[in-house]
Image (spheres, helix red, strand yellow):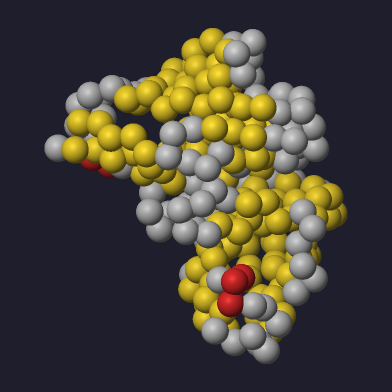
Length: 109
Length: 113
């Protein structure tokens, strides 16, 4: 089966950097994705890592270590609008996306 | 056009009602999905359509009936729902089933009374 672990909540200050970790256990691994969801909104795709290493997209970066079954999302220069829930997700061998329970990011002014 | 649209935005229905949720995308995506999301929980996959054929049913009760009339449209027919079915129902699409990036619609907030 699949399981993904991520912290339930993280708090950071505006302008700072925050890292949201995700560890996973899967029967077969086909990549780690990250989604952002604001309250009342739809999930929005942020990034994908299929291979080890860092992927950077503007203020957001995502890292993957397949040997450690671990990844993280790094958010830099935090803005109040980054307050949202962040989900890591993996694809299983049936091409289904399985979401982690989500990390609620609180940003303090 | 990178948008997935869903109607209605909100729906209140009684346990004996029949209603339908609609989803549309014009990105040429060949895979479409229905998810259910409860408050403060992750989206849970319900159904996957690939090239207009149902490819995954995650053991969803028969009171939920999906339909894919064409490659741009996805419906979810609801009948005899229970109060615990109240949730946000999200539609998503991707280029194909193997695609890792899914585009989500804004969802339909369903309340069953």
